[in-house]
Length: 175
Image 1 (cartoon, helix red, strand yellow):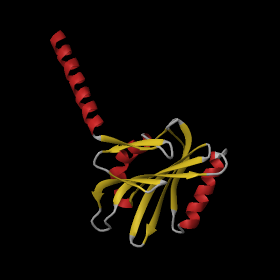
Image 2 (cartoon, one colour):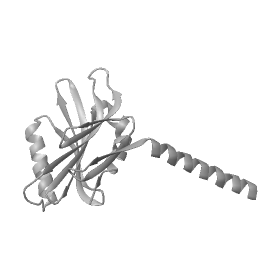
Image 3 (spheres, rainbow, N blue to C red):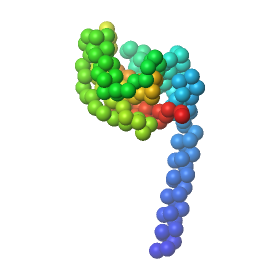
Image 4 (cartoon, helix red, strand yellow):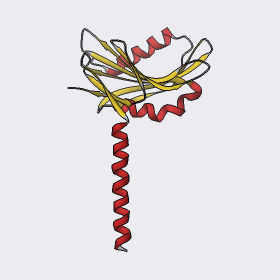
């Protein structure tokens, strides 16, 4: 009985060590010194830094639309601190509806990211023949607003959602 328990414990430790090793080697970190945040992403993802937006693109591209699901972090700095997250979220939602007339909001709720209050909104929109589904998390830190958005073709949204959530949850404001 003791041999079996010892073998089980050894196997469990080995599995955990291997899993940790694979996870450690499979992740890269993007750090924005300018906007004071970091985010982890799978090593096979492509990073495109566009100053106030960083796009982390999946290697899996849809053949019809040549579109890869992605997680992007958009940063906006404001002249005054944002003191009311609810009001900021409502303004962002109004702007979304004004910009994209065919947007359909599926869910909106309070959330938390990096141990800070945030808002999550999930919606669909169409552009030409493509229909997209997005989940966006909004959070603020003083005068800085962060929008972390997962975008995929609607029919592929759930396929990559778990991976996108891991990336989103890794977002961290550096203080």
